[in-house]
Image 1: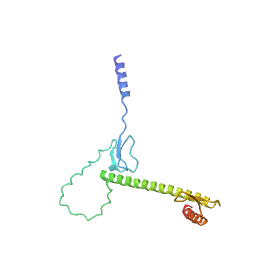
Image 2: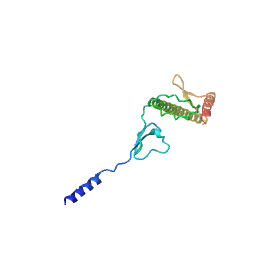
Image 3: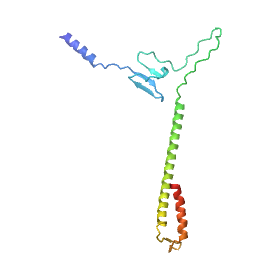
Image 4: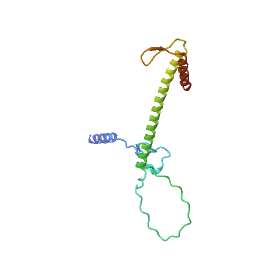
Amino acid sequence: MDLKRFLFLLLAALAAQAPAHAQYSWIDDHGTRVFSDRPPPPGTPPARILKAPHAPAPATPYPLPAPAATAVPAAPAVPAAPTKAAPPSLAERDADFRKRAAERDAAERQAAEDAKRKAAQDEQCAAARRSEVKLTSGRRLTDVDDQGERVVVTEEEKARRLAQARHVLADCR
């Protein structure tokens, strides 16, 4: 009976143990550290992969001292392969973020000013259309003078106001 109990406890302990998942860690294109149980996307440079299962530990972030130079005859100069640029530093990423934020704010201010200008022009066009309708209706128009008295608008004044309204409407169409 003790052997059955021992085997049962052993199987229960093994079943309760959570399976270990492979863990990956890398720095993505935006400079963010990513943790996942899946490997990084293809095209991620090996220098940006910080941790992979069954992989050697990443290289030390600090440069190692160069070995002492020995008296070896100099080889002919071979052009070095172009080195890949290092990822941007935190200060560079911050400056880039601030620049994009300033550009976005400027674009939003410009859009708000354009919308305000468009609304004012639409209002002015509507007022000019109403004036044109009144002035071309053929009815007698009255206005209030400086003393507060009602006066009839002359034909010359109507023609001047109509020309002014049509000038404003020319920019509306």
